[in-house]
Length: 292
Image 1: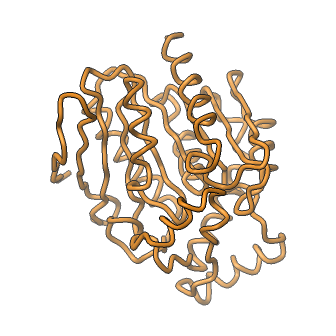
Image 2: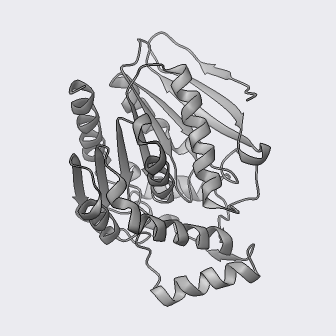
């Protein structure tokens, strides 16, 4: 695959950050960012963002991981952020998964031998779980944050969206509220000013594909057996915490942890109390690296 690696900063005392592109399914250019510690990393975290997001929103989180000696990689899903593709639309959810698989393969080539953890937020958690079903041996652990498995609309409305996707796949049907992502007004204001998510509105096809992916996972959760950390806020309005509870109850992993954060909103890593969440995630990762 062709790539165009661009080093943005490389200061001895600061994380080295870079931007890159690679060819995704169908030849689309998929954009990514990475952050590296000044010394050799002892582990890798790959981030798969959700809706109303992109890799650029993970700078502060990446810096915390880098401080702990972890290399961090994040991609913009097709049609999102700085990647090519129709905005906020996907023909098949498997296209997201295949792009992620190509990305992780590239990351592994650049970070040979290091334990790799995949962190998926919201719809990115669905993408990550589907990836894990097929490539569990590639990962040291899966971190699912605010899993978009149980969606707020009632079942009949979700069924109607699946039907609508067949007759009007590009119709815009789902606009998430930035205010539901964080209780921190500075974060919400930053999202409101972010040109890469301005006017974000999911198509009927995208939502229908998410619903179908969730239906597949419902029966396949027992096949997920790798170390699993599941995180959710109890006041999440974009994805129900019950979905994360069900994931924890039915996953086949013997090493699985569910953490529910009282009063927290949808984006735990950008919400009030994010330091506690980051500490929990880093502690979980370091424990599993030490156990290898």
